[in-house]
Length: 109
Length: 191
Image (cartoon, rainbow over all chains, first blue to last red; front, side, top):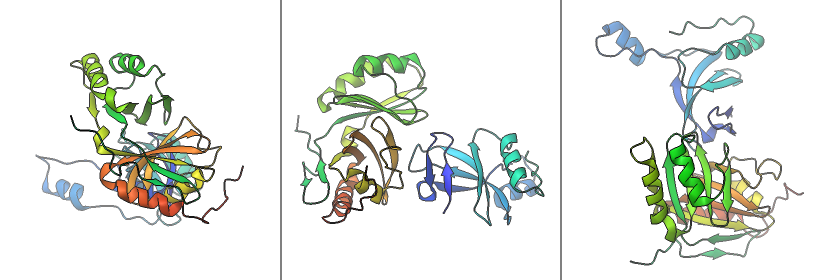
């Protein structure tokens, strides 16, 4: 069971109050993009064993989206942060690096 | 005009560890927009007389008040009969600004749970810390009650009020009855 803190309303609640929204920080390739880029945007997803960035929605609460960084193996939550960003905030990167010294931040566009 | 009647028409359950009452309809106006904007703050102050609630707050004075629902949403609570007037005041103040005020009174059902085990009854149904330290009067919690969305707040230490969608009123009443059935006290929040 995951316990997440919604950065929009400050409520810490367990997983059933939220809804997972899939991988975070995807670059949208729309009309005019190459077929390869479009395919990547539409279908290709990371499936790591370890640190992962996800979108979540506080569906039974304030209804807002946010981002969460967690470990898919240990279910540890490193932190949650605003959905109004396309990059991972430095404090989240620092927190993950503290816990996982070998981990390298992904390249987010 | 026809008489407004609540979904369960004042049903009461008082054989359990807490008393559950389906309340008569209350007026509720859902407001969305920039909560810091004067065109929302001013009419709300005029209608309710209470200050704007902080995050997760609810400021009630008698049957009138404002609840914080999300970073861009408020719920104005008022007597059912005053909704039309209040809505007009709001619409006038909002004018052409990008904001919304809608009467949702008839879309909702309201319950009151009262008794010294009120917090336990709620804790059995919602993933919420309802301890007296964490969940104090003056805060509202939007969450789920078993399978449906609901919001509740403490009126005083032993009384909570709860709103849910009218279409699930019977379901919520049955849930609360089950959670409050005789002999089911857990005595977790013994203070």
